Amino acid sequence: MTTRAAQWTPPNGPDPEALPAGRWWDAVRAPAAIGERTLAFLGTESGAVIQDRCDTLYWLITPGSAASWKLRQVTVLTANEGVATYLGVPPAHRLSRPGSYWRVPFRRARYLTDPWLLYKALAHAVLTEPDTGEEGAR
Image (cartoon, rainbow, N blue to C red; front, side, top):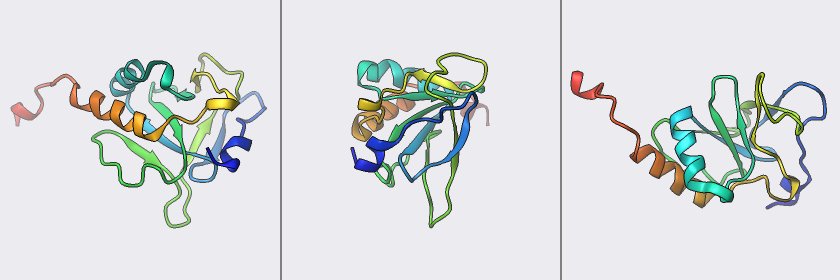
């Protein structure tokens, strides 16, 4: 974990704040079904996870550590060519709905998820996604 990442804390106010990915952390976004399987696979190895009002899950990882990732339905939020992508980050005390909240609570000592473990868990979740039969219908 870098010093910049170690010094970061979520906002203190009552509401989520839009913060730039790529500065203190990158965020890995996964839809609900893949995110749930990823959480189950990671177990206690997961760092902090944000869940938004659409049930999308976001893991925080070291900036730049997922630059080469190519996983179906998984997006890495980072700064690209100086242009930041923003994520709504809830205050550390928000642990339930309404709105965005910490699905896995923020802990300063270990809020970043190990990128290699997260990649393996996401790949497993993507590969075990139930077939919806949509491709066969085309």
